[in-house]
Image (cartoon, rainbow, N blue to C red; front, side):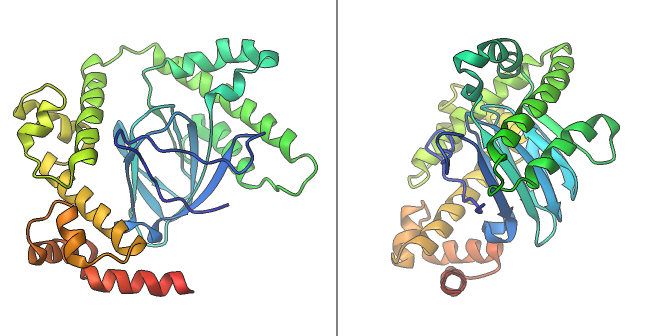
Length: 300
């Protein structure tokens, strides 16, 4: 069970790697101290994701932002945009993902049609699960059971499938109740626009991007661009752009030997001193110190 670094394409799509392609389900234990500023940025994937906070706390954004504490959990629907940031140092998050087409095999095709497609077609991005809320107890019990699975047991695969069916049955009941509520079409439209604008930033962050160009990526005006970012991302377009540039710079600092000035300019900053100032404000370390500390951690 490893810690993941979210690697996405220009559309923020995360590619999930499975250790066992016969049973395509991946388990992670995310230690948020290992992420830049303790944050997994906005991303999405085709897979269903379930997560359980083992230690600490998370500020989790899934259309809305909620605080999850130890014992709380979350279900993330396929293709839902989400992000997480630790609210205290040392936060640990257990997560597992699996593809919806796990249920598309002929023997369980009826399950896919009647039990999985309604979830995929739902407007609900997912579910927040709180340990002190009665209606969440069955799902949280399933997540804890996943955490306790032992790969070495002879019944491991049977236990995984049993738990997946139990878990998705609970999700179907909960999502069906949500589906009866009126759909907020404007909110769904804002999510679609946010994806397009974030994709533009992720593709062109090394260039001289303006708010007007970001807005053009979604065929909207400046004011709607700002409303969309504040409503979905919780930041202004320029704040998000700057933070994304810094996160890319941090990745290059730890994964390459490129010169600091080269990293600075390739990430869209026009001044090395300004880059250094922003980086230290965000990370508490200069770019050089950040690289040195990362190398020291990797050597242990």
